[in-house]
Length: 435
Ligand code: 4AD
Ligand code: MG
Image (cartoon, rainbow, N blue to C red; front, side, top):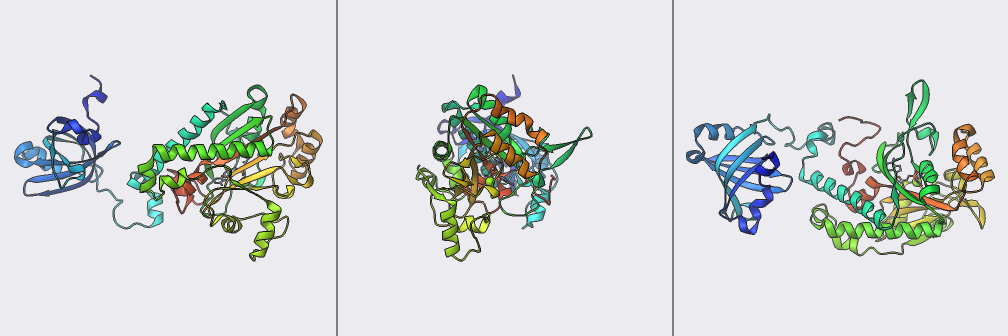
């Protein structure tokens, strides 16, 4: 018999037909109290929580003495039967016939009011908190929802490299590594590889870690984040925005359907997500600048918009907003020049509502090889490094467009977390790459 078959999931205790039945459980002790020869344990596994009562005269002195000394987060195995108890969570308890201590453990350090630094230093233990347990279940569901959407929409998942020979999103923010004596970089974006993959597959996506050596400490920047990127052949900016809004709505509705309890526990009513529908509003950069200037922000045409400006633009919104047609000087080299205005590019950022700001960066790609070459030159990067990318314009060049979405960024908004680090189990920031 395999180890898996011998134990009941703790959720079994609450099952309608479990009353009076024998169960065999194992899990982590969350709470422990003993009085007058009775030990009350609350134990946890991935499926739930149960209250266990163990009597000294039932389980024996030796077992009782050892069970009494189990620390919080120690592990135990219980055999017993399910009984009604109005005071227990869920109205049930397990009356133990035997308690076996698997690991008594040492005193768990996570209890008293702890500073933020202490909690981050002990992140490997803090991830057991009910709040973080819920966050990472929602995150897994979110990743699944994106994959289900792409599967239904016939977009192929691909696996681009993380070790790369050129920094694709701006050299200053690339982590440089020593690649056997030559410079290498941790990927900032898989975009150029996705663009290569559309010739044979037309519609592709990838979910990979991306790295940004941004020193700025903000509540929305990580140095390592999960990057969902998509690239579609035969599409322009308008078509891409329709795809993105359909994807975001689909994924939010899926999440609301599959994880309502966790969402509620984390402060987001599932109905709020269900209410979000396409189309999202589109606002041109030029109009945003005019509005912001009117609100007293020190911006003029050509200014890059920061956290404060994005916050002002989205604070009172209930749906995301597309900001479009930025000046080319503040955007990446690969973005297509607008057909009706050579000063702007066919780009859109999707801003989350309630002040959370950018969650997606998207654009139609420059297909004109002369203009593209000029834009690469203007970045100051050696052109040789981009020869392979220019080859994509020489062989089977088609209109195409794509986007990158920060998984932790969208999760931060959906779960209303104050800091992006609370959307990832082991956050990487300028100050920290351990534990
Ligand atoms: O806007 P970005 O820099 O766009 C690109 O990298 C494109 N090459 C993507 C593409 O078209 N394939 O990054 C895309 C998204 C941002 O909108 C943001 O959500 C997230 O990635 N992001 C970060 N998330 C957390 N921490 C950071 N430091 C991030 N930098 C970008
Ligand atoms: Mg961006």
